[in-house]
View (tube, rainbow, N blue to C red):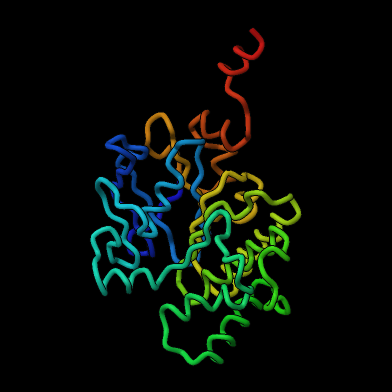
Length: 263
């Protein structure tokens, strides 16, 4: 299993327990994310992937535990301190969450309008540059409905980058996309990570995408509500000591399911 020194981590999730209505979905989990890496959270349905993401971006307060971003705990931070932590991250939600009545330029400049006092020409320039980074230069005046699903995802990534965050959180970036478009989004993530040194935390169910982009993964276990494995996805797929982890990463049915299917 791949290990990361604590001092090398840009994110530390420590002893996190979270769930709904006093029922934990994840129980006492811990993992680290290194600066500049693409880190993917995997797991079956109901394993807590989205719950962890919401805790990491400050949308959901866990029952216990810490989420340290650059050493600062987003769980306990309040006021200006919390605002400073949030300024270090950007988020792309699963459906993109673009405003349909606004052009791409207006969507991307929205965070700049909310959180900066830059003059409008400067905001327009930054928004145009961010759209250029995701391959959408020339589409500034289009509204989301005029774009393909993949272009909408890229525009949402551009908006998440508007305030120059150190870390980007992506929720199911390949969801709803065909294989070719999904591969284009994957390549964009790799380009941003390599060329800009950005750190990515990605919730995904797409194994093909994971093998293409992930430096490391954490695999959640629905039964134990803990972590089944952490490490390189290909190494875990080929040589994990856990049969379940190998089955998961090789998309194999369990022997028990196979027996039921043929009984």
